[in-house]
Length: 127
Image (tube, rainbow, N blue to C red; front, side):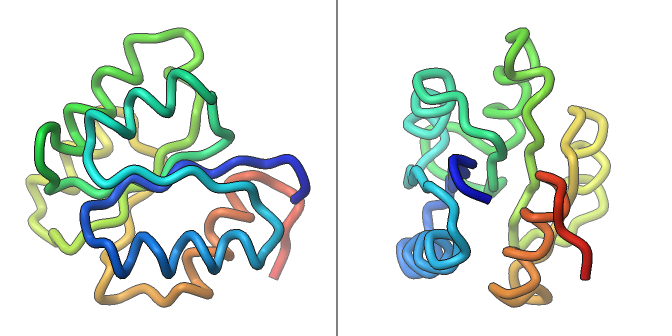
């Protein structure tokens, strides 16, 4: 997984740090942002291989971030996994309508599972 960069956008500081550590330990480069606007800026500046995106955040929601990403030629292609506490069917539907790549509920998903999902989306990983 060398040279693969993951951008994590989440306003929960403890989870952001835990994901950063888990993905770094798994051999990924990581970038982190604590709100949507900063995450969008990092995404366009660094063009990561995959984005983990919370939905409910200050300044710009995950849905807004994804909509802006999908308007860009690079942003249309980057895998975006929603990682959120919202299990509201409207949020799930909106995530896929905006061309999200996947949807994980934080409270139902371990760090190990998140790392496995990231590896699966980036190819070369079989459990």
